[in-house]
Image 1 (cartoon, rainbow, N blue to C red):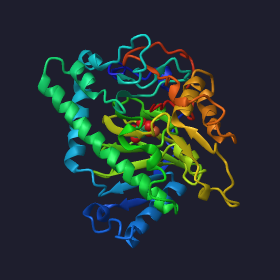
Image 2 (image 1 turned 45 degrees about the vertical axis):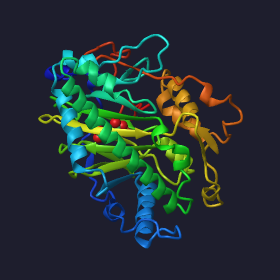
Image 3 (image 1 turned 90 degrees about the vertical axis):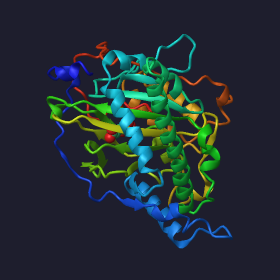
Length: 404
Ligand SMILES: O=C(O)CCC(=O)C(=O)O
Ligand SMILES: [Fe+2]
C-alpha cells in the first residue's frame, strides 16, 4: 500500500463511484460524564438512578435505530487516547521494512495468525477487490500479543517498544472497561438484569483485538474505498477516528458521513450482538472513504466473549411483538468457525450472517465448542499483489472486515 499509494489507482482498487453521502448530523451523541463522576452510580438498594436510566435508554434507542452511537465524556482519559494515536501514527510513519518486522510469521499449527502489520485483505479469503488501507492488528485478550509484536518492530530500541506496548495496553484496558459499562447500560436499557451480557462477555477473558487502520492519501478517492461496506461480525466495536473524517454509515438507503469529534468514540453493534438481542439492536453497514490529500488513522477495538461463552437470547426479548428471529443460543467460537469457512467461498461473506438467523440453537447439536480450534486468517504483505481476482471492479457491498 505504501508503494501503491504513490502510483495511479490500479483497476483492482476501483469501486463504483460513491459521492452519494450526506452528513450524519442526526447520529445520536450521548454524554456519559455523570456516570464517571460517581454522581449517578447505582443507588444503595441497587436501582439505577434516573439519569443512569436515561443514558441506558438513550443508548438502547441509538443501537435500535442507528446501530451506532457517539460517546463523549466516556471515562477514557484524553491522555490515553492521544498516546495511542501518537504511537499508531509513529508506527505507520516508519519505513516499510521496519513495519514489516511486525508482520505475522505464521508457523504451522499456530492459531496465532490474525495479528500484526499487513495489507487490509486477508489471504485465503474469497474477495473481489482491494481496499485502500494498511493496518496493524494486535490481539489483546485472552492473550496479549502486543509486547511480542512491539519487540519485533522496535527490535533496535527497547524504549520505543516499551512506549508502544504501554500505550496500547493502557488504551485496550480502558476500552475493555468501557465495553463492560456499555454492555451493562444496554442490559438496563432493555429492562434486563445489569449483568445479562457481561456475565457471558467476561471482560478481559473475552476474545478482543485492537486494530489500527491507516488510509494513505489516494489519487482518485471517489473511485475507491478505504474499507468496503460491511457490518462487523463481533459484539461491539469502539472506534476512534482522527481529525480526518471517513467513516460512513448506511441508513434508510443513504450513506451518512460521521464528522470526527475530538476525544469521542463511535460505538457500533456487531452481528453477534444483533443476534443476542433478538434484533432489538441493529448491526448496520458502514464503510470508510479516503481522500486525495490527507492520510487518515482510525483505531478500532473489537470485543467478543470468550469463544466458548454461550450467548442466549434473553426470554424478555422474545414476545409477540418481537418473535424469535435468531439462533436462541450460540457461541462466538462456533460463529467464528462458520465465518472462516464461509469466507473462503464466493458470496460467502454476505451469506455468513444468515447463520445467526437459523432458528435452531446450535449449542446442543454441536460438540463442545471450546474444544474446537479457532480458525484464523492470514494477512497479506502490505505490497503483496497476489490478488486472486484481479480483473473485477469492487462491489460496494462486500465485507473485508474480519475483526476476528
Ligand atoms: O476506519 C473507519 O472509519 C472504519 C473502520 C471499520 O469499520 C472497521 O475497522 O471495521
Ligand atoms: Fe467496521
